Length: 44
Image 1: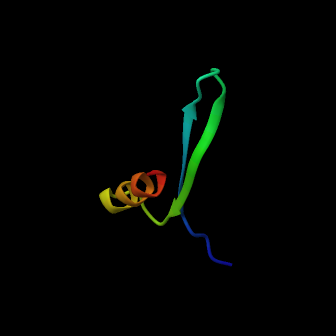
Image 2: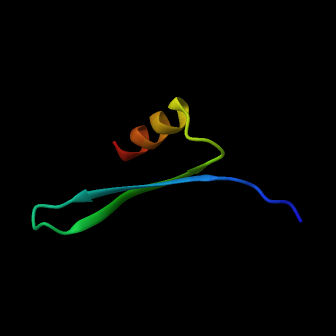
């Protein structure tokens, strides 16, 4: 058995009614600048 470490980021926003909404989820092997760039680009 092999243990692998992954980074999971969930982007959550607040809508006009005050409710939370999941905007996106990203899973990667590290939380690097490229990881954040990809997440933010996917939200647009």
